[in-house]
Image (cartoon, rainbow, N blue to C red):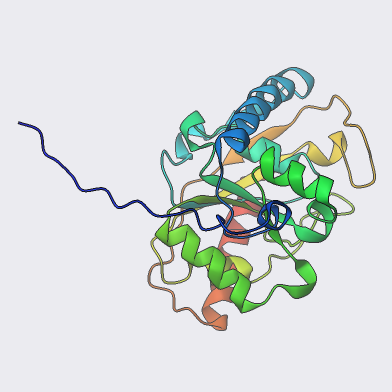
Length: 239
């Protein structure tokens, strides 16, 4: 005898949006085309990273098997999100979203389409990143649930050194059980530093640390600052 469960079908949250608008929406949901493109891109990037950059991953056992979670790392190159996403299981392809700079990756219709359909990225507009946008990301992270790839420095390093983390990460996870996975990237700056168009064949290492949770931290600015300080320290230790 089989246990029958009721299904509640809900329309996609971006159903009524114009196509170009949906690419840059925090409510975007993947269809068949986006899923297929993203899978092909991930397969290609895994092969590329293994061959061209001899990618070495340490701490792979700390990668979550299911969402919600937030992967965070230092940021020095456009290669960083590709490297962070490479150890994820294949069945997570449509449920993990790199948080990308809207003014870079969503600055034109063509860029928006590539970022959304291929990279599966969600935009964060750095000049207009208010609490409302962070609240939308937080709600999706917890309710859907999903995973994020996030760089708390807020932008790429211009000299390869790690900069202080911003409080946005704390706003996302304070008072929740969502695990934050600290990671450290080395070699990506040498391979493709800001301003360079094509990557050099430099070795890249990804070190993944144990999950951190902040269920008992209040959702307020002092606690956000404590959270990002703790995560930043862990990432530096992984170096």
